[in-house]
Amino acid sequence: MESDDSLERVADFYKKALAKYGRVLDCSRPAPADADSSKADSKALTCGDDKPEKGGVLLKAGTKENQRLAAVQPNGSGSVYQLVYLAGWSNSEKK
Image 1: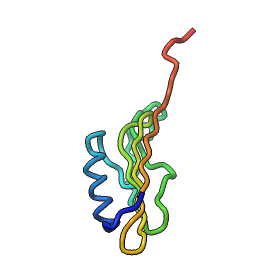
Image 2 (image 1 turned 30 degrees about the vertical axis):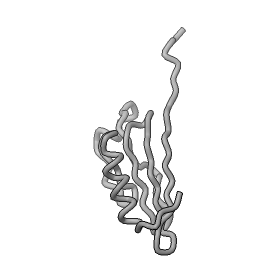
Image 3 (image 1 turned 45 degrees about the vertical axis):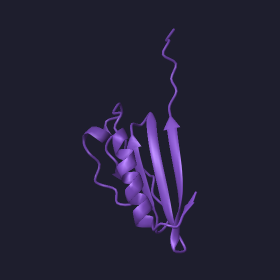
C-alpha cells in the first residue's frame, strides 16, 4: 500500500498499533539476543535474519507462532508499506 506520509510517520503509527500484540521489535536496529530468546523452545519473537530493505523499517510483534509484521520503505516524498500476519498451525491431537 502507498501513503503520502513519511516513512517515519507510517512506522510510528504501526509501532503503536503493533504494541497491542506484545513487545515491538524494530528489526532495522536489532538488539543483542536475549538469553531467553536463544532457547530452542522459547516462544519469544526475534528478528533473526529478518531485516528491512535498504532505507526501510521492519517491525515485528507477537510470538514465533503468531507474528505480525509491518515493512515500510521510502517512496518519493511518501512511503510504501506491507502488512503481514503469520500464523502457525499445529495438530493438537497426538497419536
